[in-house]
Length: 159
Image (cartoon, rainbow, N blue to C red):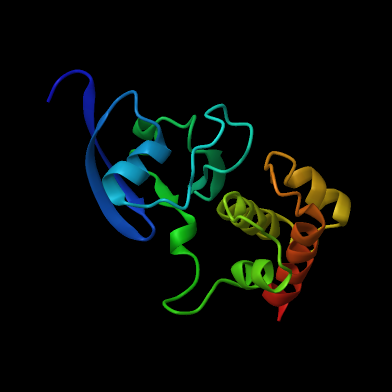
């Protein structure tokens, strides 16, 4: 192994993972190229749009900026891990029911941010929702439906 590569070990969507990576590679690159996980999508490559959102040790990170080497020893969760088998996570259900997407490109990032928001604030106000999701951009402009989906997800999680 050269100095430009490193072996990392982490938990990916609940399962142990080991992979040799280039030390320059972003987490989203490794997830796509080595694990065929395409829910986190690189769009702006600057950490400004939220499309590449991934949870690392329960906290949302911009996968395009987060170097994969920093995932060594961490728990990484992608949108593909939500739900149980055929059943969707309540946040995913809420996004579908509220029609909180058009093209769907940004949806995985919004879903993961919503999960983190509701873990921290189970009953957020509209202002808190707007503030918390301000780092995620939707080019289709479904923001009213996204806010409705967050409200609905909060209700579903309480039930």
